Image (cartoon, rainbow, N blue to C red; front, side, top):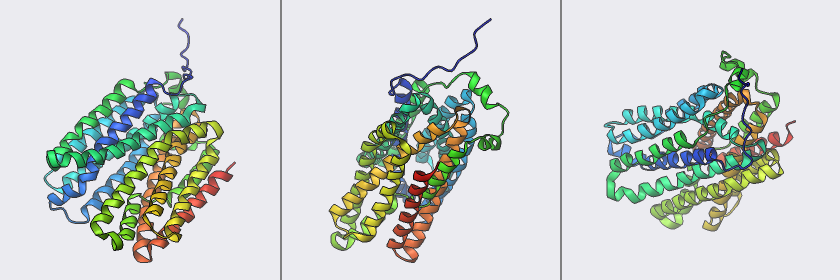
Length: 402
């Protein structure tokens, strides 16, 4: 009679083959689709798309991605489905991004973007669950920090490569080129990511349990944690609004062209800081505790929002504010998921990650819409004030939950 299966103990070192594979998948996937995103406005203009097309494409894709994250969370609670879901998701993003190059009208781009973002959303909970399982609980901050650093590095490299290749390959050529990093991401995940735990975890989770039943199993501390995440998310607007504000501030002195160039450089600096700080933030969270360190990260968002309202908008001040925004992003991205991994029982960890991703996605959508409306209808300061208040509220809720 064979011995019962047991769940393998996580290795003592945090940078395992699985962590490296997931990190490389995040790096190359972002490298490819961020290169496409950087030239998407130019491509849509070449197709004769109306001005609202980009907003429709991004809004529909982000909305469908949020729902896909919930479905992906359900799939991630089945250990046998985690790795196949991730592989399919990475391939879907790579193929649909590549296919932009063959689109003849903007509705085709919309359909491709929506399909790719659904794949991107569905793979997230499986990737995060495999990453949490690949290390010991006390190492999750390092693992998630490393993955976020690699992801953000890809977000830096994508636009840089698109800019460098645009003059050589043209817009459609760059879109075809994105297949190279996209497929590299899928192959890295396929060959290096861990396969998941044994069937005993699958039985413990209950193969026939509905998604609603799994959500009801999430522990009460996790709902307290989500309340803080949600409050912060209601003020966590898209960083592209920072680019807009910087260009508005600088245009009277530098002119529109130079102001736009400096603003994009500031955004690149934001991403570089984010990538550089993500791993140290996760490692520090492993050492001193993630909850209050995450609250500190949320406070940083309130501080840079206040800075845009109160400080004289010189270039050095903008550099400092964009840098602080990058540190905030690193703290948030590295610590939210690693803290969630500590709170969630393994049998519902996938569903928990799916709910977390959806809460963040909905929060990002609401915050960007509200901040944009206040910005246009009242003043930029009103938008930053709203964002700062909700960021501070999120910090209080995260710090005070029991």
